[in-house]
Image 1 (cartoon, one colour):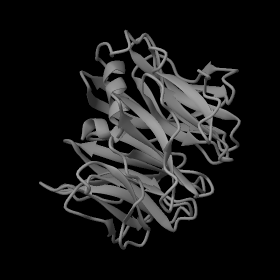
Image 2 (cartoon, rainbow, N blue to C red; image 1 turned 90 degrees about the vertical axis):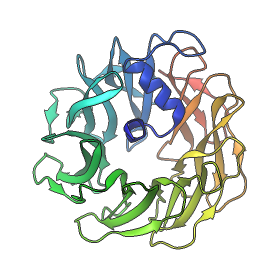
Image 3 (tube, one colour; image 1 turned 120 degrees about the vertical axis):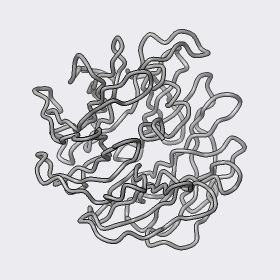
Amino acid sequence: MEASRLWVCAAACAFAALALGGGAVAQGTVTRGDIQPTWSPDGKKIAFARLVGTHLQLYVMNADGSGRRALTHGSPDHLDPAWSPDGKTLAFSRLVRAHGQTLGGQVYSVPSTGGAQKRLSSGAGGYDELFGWSPDGKQLLFDRIQAGVGALYVMNADGSGQKSLTPSPEDDDYLAAWSPDSKKLSFDRTAANAFGDIYVMPSTGGSSHVVARSAADDTDARWSPNGAKIAFMSDRASHYEVYVTSSGGGAAHQITHTPGGAHNPSWSPNGGKIAFTSYLGGQWQIGVVNSGGGGQRMLTSSSGDNTDPAWSPDGKKIAFESTRDNASTIYVMNGDGSAQKPIS
């Protein structure tokens, strides 16, 4: 489960292995790499993680690629950038890794304009990995992994009030996300000797309920912008496809139909479309489909892998990672796939 906690997409996992101790990729030797593009709330900037030497560092740049600056330096690895809703702060995971394994880590924050890092979580008895800010900006959601098993925690934005939400040592809880109104959380749960299921629970803690369960692996839940639906990926059709279900649970509707599988669903801001990644012709490519099904088409077709699509807040552009230039680079394209260009 180690790799899936950071990047579900296999292509991104391959780069992560390279960045944190691997070797070369098919396109040649990667000497740098930019991953995890994340738009600021106003859409004017993009945060990302860059491989510098042997460690990942956080950077911020303008949405056109100008004004690039580093926010972190040195060791260990700094990744999972998450903007506060007011755009003033970036929270992130600060992880100590070796030979593809995480040895320790905590959640930190740093001003988005640069400045001193602040440790927020304790990481006691394991390591902590960030999932993101509550939409109201009051709390942070993270996973505490102990002996390979994850439990969900929340804490106030200043690091106080850390609270365990899923303390069961028998279940592995991970890949969590806030509902748009900050009142609920979705997460993956893998019980002993079982495939993953998707649960929803109150963000204050309490009883959880299943919203997606099958004889296959249901994972990587993403809330629709209005909170009414959840998109997720499942291999119930023999390979992974994207499905949509009510956030209250119920029948799931398959919306992608791909020969190479569909992964990493990402809702457009108006909820009308879902971007995804698919493995086609030996490369990962980015596609889009109507959130109700239909209208599926691929947006990229380049050499190299194209992964991790992230919609701009206005829904007009998509930032993504691409290795078409023999390095992982942040690209931006229009929502219809036109005008693809590197910006990092």
